[in-house]
Image (cartoon, rainbow, N blue to C red; front, side):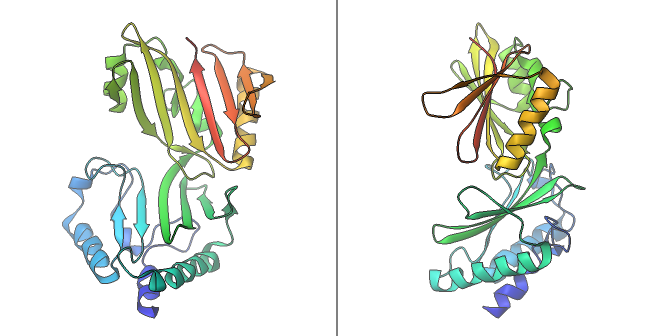
Amino acid sequence: MSELLIASRQLYGAEAASLGSLFTGLTFGTDQAKLAPEVSGRLAEFRRATHSELSFGDATEGPIDRIVVHPNADGESSTREPLCGGIYGLLKDSWGIGVREQNLRNTIWLNPSTHVRATFVNEDDQCLLVFAPYATPAQWIDRGASSVVPLSIIGQPAAKVAAMFKAQIDDDTMTWSGTGLGAGTEQTHFTATIVGGKVAMFTASTRSIEETRTALIDHLTAKFKAPKTEPTDEGTTRLTFGSRPQLTLVADDGDDLTLTVGKL
């Protein structure tokens, strides 16, 4: 156990949500196939020595959009559970207590200088340490070209948008993923509706804690004026902002939120 805890110190740096020495030479956006041999070798040795899994996104190829560490993934739960608690203790000692999701199981740390967040998940007989870029509310949605939520794609040809985001088209639906929002645990997942070969509307769904959701609403209100509010059948509140394209935000009592851009 002590050897695994010592090895786990390679995972994180001194600053909150910073990468450790194991990931030196690795940056988000780098193609997985183009990692330097010394980096690939170091990662392979860590996997072997600690029986841990490392992954860099939904696919095993393409750009690195997050780093997921599953310590001692193939070990016995009797070993993994105390290891998980030990790693969490080390992270708290180095980074502070962080913030908790609504379910109180996921702990999140943000690094505002690098816009990287780290999430520690301890549930369902497993623990995961996840590093990923994040966007502030102003970066997540704006009228500029760098906005994570791409307002300008409404009315654009679906083929053009698919090429832009390497999106998957299935009949009249298109899906892709992007940077997550603030203190959360998910990427932003996009689903667009195609009508007549063009993007008619899309949703952007993600998870963020209440503080981030409040900051998002404040940002949207300042950018697009105060919204019209109304209850939904599910007991949540729908906020519709007077903008073009139309923006409608629904956030539940947990940490889920969905922004709809445009309308049919």
